[in-house]
Image 1 (cartoon, one colour):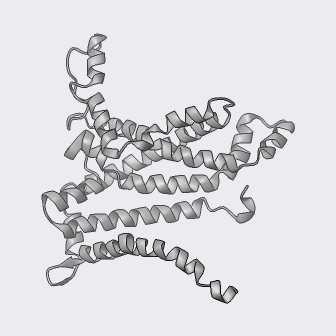
Image 2 (cartoon, one colour; image 1 turned 60 degrees about the vertical axis):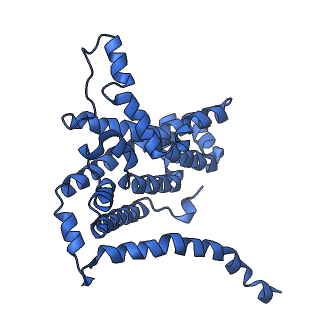
Image 3 (cartoon, helix red, strand yellow; image 1 turned 90 degrees about the vertical axis):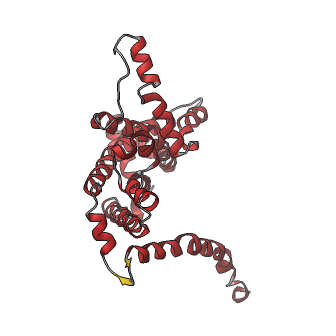
Length: 283
């Protein structure tokens, strides 16, 4: 009987394997090949043109700066919200539903919503003008106000993508046995001590997953940035879009895509190394 059914597991995973091969592996290989293709052979010409791009250094700087600011803030906010939600006795589902509403909104729609708030004739300027705090429309998203533009993008990203970190951390908190915290409380441990010595170490696998997911997506950020700042705030994914659609140069666009993938893989390797959890340390 076991010999007859040994093929069943392979048959069950075959559709997923075919799906991944068709929609992930094949495009991945094609993109890498395209990034090294120039003329009649293989070369680094596309990467040289990418590195020589006027906006390349600024796009790298902006992408890393945005990631380094947004991801830690999202984790801290999500930790606070997850702790609050898990301590609620009533209305927990309703609060969690409200906090995760941004998950149902596309990146571009979120960017356009914040554009309606922050543009010259947007709701923020209208409110400030009605209160007498400004004399007229103030530009927050122009090239002349790079700091305001950066913080506008940070706010939009915090509102849009913190919810996915929240969901992952709430799932992790629910896996931690309550007996650990109760025992620590009996022995006189303060709430902060229980959080740092019990909750955070046991939450490390969930933190690892959340950090990997959000960091990879942060390096790929495009729609929110493009909606709010356009070309005034270059990022790597935005430059790939420009080279493919405006310049019609698919090789350089592929080089940008490969660079984003390499950075994401490097960040993932760091998280897997730093936040590695042994099986005996799991809850």
